[in-house]
Amino acid sequence: MSTRTHQSRSFFTQVFRPIPRDYLARRRWFRRLSTTLMIVVLSLLLAAVIVYTSNPSSFGSATR
Image 1: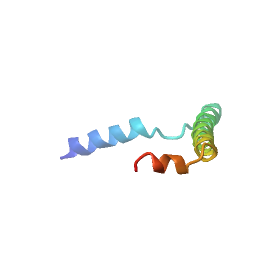
Image 2: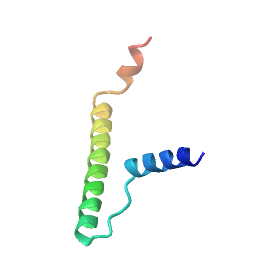
Image 3: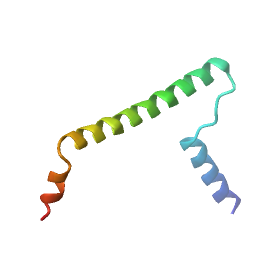
Image 4: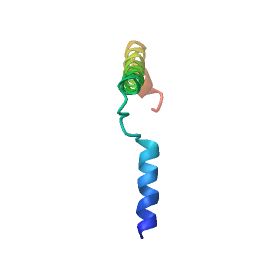
C-alpha cells in the first residue's frame, strides 16, 4: 500500500511542481504561470467577443 501512495505522490509532483526556492527560478515560475493564465483569459474573452458580435441568436436557429 505504501508503493501506491508513493506513485500517486510522484504523479502529483510531476503535474504540480513545487515552487522553487531559488529567487530567479521562482520569478521565472511565476512569470510562466501568469503568462499562461493571461493567454487563457484573453483567448476566452476574445472568443466571447467574436461570438457576441456575430449575432449569437443565429446559432440557436441552426438547430431548429
